[in-house]
Image (cartoon, rainbow, N blue to C red; front, side):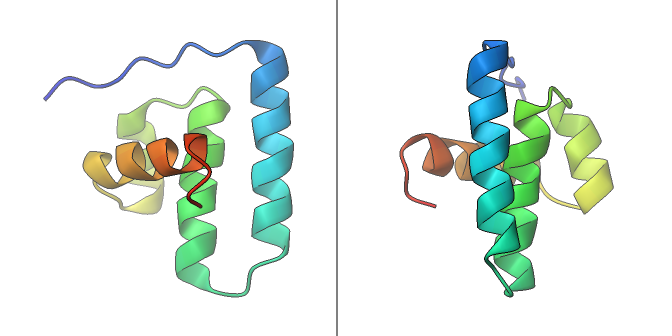
Length: 74
């Protein structure tokens, strides 16, 4: 399975990290926090395999959550 590459400008990453952190801070549901944390780690430059190990998630979940964030669905 091909892993999507991460190529974001540092300004976009900083904005995304701040937005995701706000989301995390405002949520009590652990599942939503886990999703947001996965997205935050992507924007911080972690490899999908690393996030998979850290949060015990599937790569497909990480990918879909990142896409949902990009499309403002989460």
